[in-house]
Image (cartoon, rainbow, N blue to C red; front, side, top):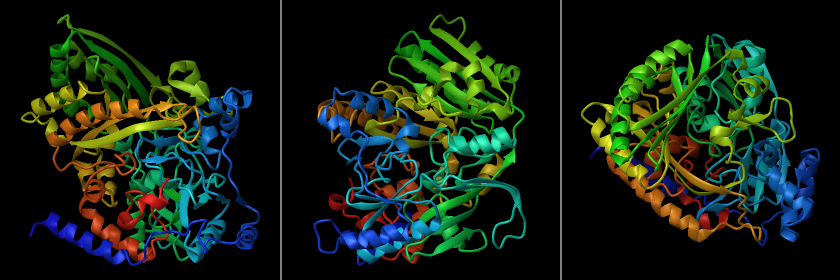
Amino acid sequence: MNKKSIILLFVFALSHIASASGTNYCQPNESCWPKQEEWKKLKDKVHGRLLSSESYLEPCKTDPQSSACITALKNSKNPFFVEAQSEATQFTGWLNAWNSAPSPYVIAAQNAEDIVAGVNFARQHHLRIVVKGTGHDFLGRSNAPNSLLIWTHNMRKITMHDSFVCQGCPAGFPAVTVEAGARWLEVYNEVISKHGRYVQGGGCTSVGAVGGFSLGGGFGEFSKKFGTGAANMLEAEVVTADGKILIANAYQNKDLFWALRGGGGGTFGIVTKITYRTHELPKSFGVFEGSIIAEDDQAYKQLLSYFIPFYRENLSNEHWGGYIFIQRNNVLKFSLQFQELNKAEVEKIWHPFKDSLVGKKLYKIENKIVEIPPQKMWDYNLMKKIDPNSIVADVEEKENHFWWKTHDKDQASQFLYSYLSRWLPMKMFKDESAPKLAEALFQASRHWDFELHLQKGQAGASPFALKHGKETSMNPELFNAALMFMLTTGKQDVFPNIKGFEPNITEGENVLEHMKSAIRIIREATPGAGAYVNEVDYFEPDWQRTLWGENYPRLLSIKRKYDPANIFTCHHCVGSETLDENTTTP
């Protein structure tokens, strides 16, 4: 019997053992649902921080033309506004998968004790728990109807440490402790702008700095240099299913610590704060943006064949991150970030590739390089001055609040038609496989536009990133991956439960057929490749192997140890084999 068969048998056995605990949570129409006096006791327990939620889009239900509705729709495009509404999520749903739905009761937690009270109450009454920090989740895991929502938005404290010594650890490291509601923009302002250190966080400014980000692994533009968010985690405080507050690190609750570093959010407990290692700030940061337009299909195919070895030799290393856009109109676009390089060095790196195209009269090439003072990388005022087209300011003009126009502009309140991804193994970029990869990318681009995310593969990463990354519970296939293929499409101003704003199902399903054709080509070219926990198809087949590979049996065993009754569960999360999708998901 081979290794894969053993893994699958072990998973099957454990999942059936788990079924005894059940996941048919209590519903409001059942006698087990808490009485009003019981909710009142919970409210007293959390010092009045138990809320009833009402959608900020309520005016659109009664009068879509009203000024109140128009204002609500405008606000819906601001990710910072959306995550400040307890009932709202970054995405409004996913075609044929989930629709954003409010919880009838919300604990607006301010500390770990509030969360303990919520967990104990949910366990006592067999209620479903969902956790929302920012709600920036593609799979709908931070919302569910008829659930108790633990909302960590108000837990925003950020503490710098010159030398953080975790509980039981023999030595300290420069670090930052971040509470569960903080966003990465706030953390960057504290760590980079104010203290001149670097912390590896997410690329989107509004993404939560704890929650699903690092629990699922967590990538940012410079993850090939500094590693994933999970790799940089030194310690976590977590509320477990029995209502205890545990400290998990490499020296105590070691199994839980390993699981939290990549095993997925909403699974093993509710993390209230994380301490991350900080690093010496690089001497330089910068942005490389450009495009190459091919005259026809044949020229485009040739362009891709030129680019693959160039990427392997020059970009798959610790200096680079960002995105490459491969489009149906035969345009190759770049939105890349670099560190520890200057403009002259970047030009030297790109010169051979550009030189191989110049003079062929088949390509139009444009690019620009912008150097950014390292301590100002996340400074709104500087970005507004040197590259104003790259950012969108918070509509309320809050201090230093912005998001990236290139990649984040249309995400807030977007309804997803689909979100498909796949790691592309570095072996596909080798000389003997490169032609096959070029052909696969070209053929996929005939069906739909897609992206390649440099930082979401760890082949070519720094020794630090590889060493500490392999200590986590992330799928080992990550460390063989050159980058991640991503295919996503959706629409803003779509709200499934509001008349006049519903998704166009026919349009969505037509788009989805093109997307499926594209991902099918990539899947066939990359047998056995995995995908990233936080950015994967809702309908991913064989999701346990795809998301965690050989680590899944150990993760499932740890899940059963810390949460034997399945208090915490979510779609395609560890231990969710018995989740009743018909009654417990939005």
